[in-house]
Amino acid sequence: MTAPTAPLPDLAVAALHRLEARLAGLADGESATINGVVCTAVSVRVADLLTRHDRLQSRCRRLSAEAATTEDYNQLLDWQVMLADCRCQLAAAGRLHLVEGAS
Image 1: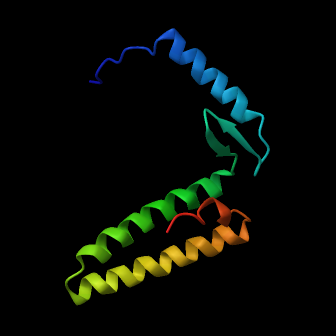
Image 2 (image 1 turned 90 degrees about the vertical axis):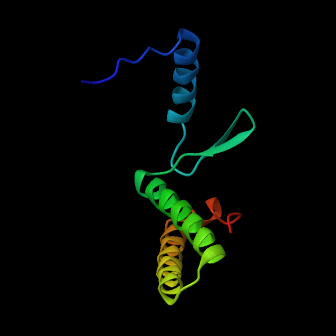
C-alpha cells in the first residue's frame, strides 16, 4: 500500500512549469541565470558524471579526515582514481569547468 500524497499547490506547479519551460529552451552547454543561480543544460551522460563526481569527492573528503587503517587508505586511493577518471571524462566532454571550483 502506498501512502497518499497531497498535490502541490497551484502556485508551486505554475512556478515549476515556468522553470521547466525556461530550462527546456537551453541548448546543451548553454547557461541561464535563474534567481541568481547559474544553470547549465547538460546531457544525461554529463549529469551522471557530475553526480558521480560530487559523490566521490564527498567520500574522499570524509574518508581522508578519518582514515585510520591501511584498508581506509587503499579505499581512499581507489576513490581518488575514480574521481580522476570522472574528471577526465568531464574534460573530454568539455564540461570540466562545471566542477573546477569544487575541490
